[in-house]
Image 1 (cartoon, rainbow, N blue to C red):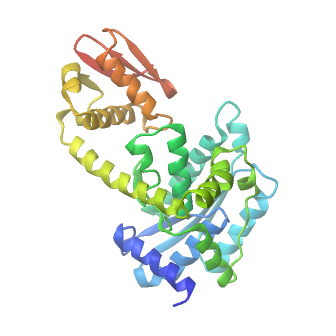
Image 2 (cartoon, one colour; image 1 turned 30 degrees about the vertical axis):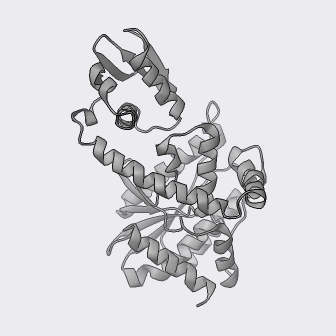
Image 3 (cartoon, rainbow, N blue to C red; image 1 turned 120 degrees about the vertical axis):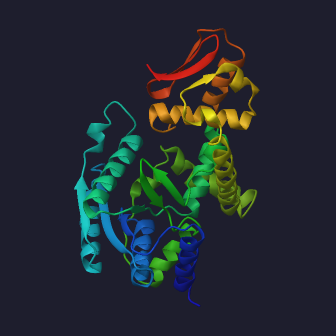
Length: 326
């Protein structure tokens, strides 16, 4: 069996194992033009008749690099050659991020475009090209920044985000195998030179730290980190379902005595869930913030307040702990 067939079979296995695609699905594929997303598009395109689903290509030109226009043209041409409907858009991310994080603004702009395209095409899923190396890098990055179980679950093969089902069929495939697949099929793709810029933490992990760990500590470190993410995802999913059975599961205010008496795992999940209900997500919320909330619960006097990132505050009264926007 050729290397290309092995990868396609791995993707088919992931589709079945994680129930990523069902008959009749309409799927948006986020295509940057890089090797991962191009590989994903080709593989899904090869399976669409067999598995009875439809594809649509979406690309966002962030206008951050001088070659971004060429990449958008490449994706447009690729979609046309494959006969797949495409949406290509441009957003000046640098201008939007004048007072914030470029990475976060770019991520939000992409998701906004994906959601808009999904509504237009009546698509029910969004496929992204994250691979096993991305998973390993994310786990290591979160370890370095400080993370609990939720953070270690990192990139999940299937996740509901703001009502949209995100799927990642390549999550168990190495980056080097993706590149070999493309080379063996003589499939062209774009290279993002910003991946070589070590000003970003992820790039330093990718270009320096992971190769060091692989060479001097564990040659299978990428798989080890990916397995840690997989295990953490299962554990977190189980705990989440258990936490959902608590009467407080959908609240943003809790009885203080109830929080004190809970098992720490359940208490921390309920705290995270409350943040999500007020804020919409838990981005920029780390384990250090959850520990600070526990310090508020157990040690600080009534009427104390903890201010969390992005305008969220938590107030302790004599009998309750309440989450709100400040």
